[in-house]
Length: 94
Image (cartoon, rainbow, N blue to C red; front, side):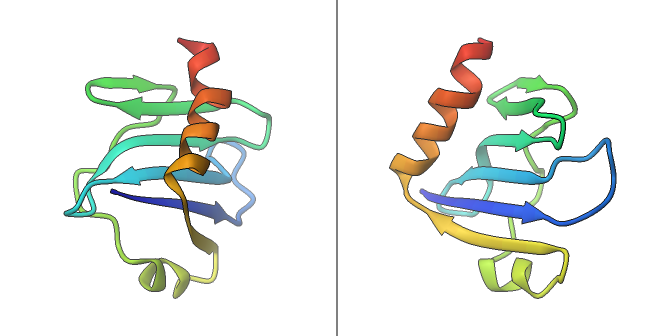
């Protein structure tokens, strides 16, 4: 598994500003958290989709590929970091 945290720099009010994903060995998302400017949290896992958040149907590009787009600021995070986001942002909503 790989875990990524991506800041999306934009002015859209209805799109997330932070995307946090758990990726399998083929870089497909298995869990995803999206955080919006107004504090709303969308998430997805298995067949569950909350707000407009869904798991991608294509493999996620590499960190370098994501970083090549100026509106994205990606970094790899640890499993522990991802689980903390999941526990803090998603579990209270379940």
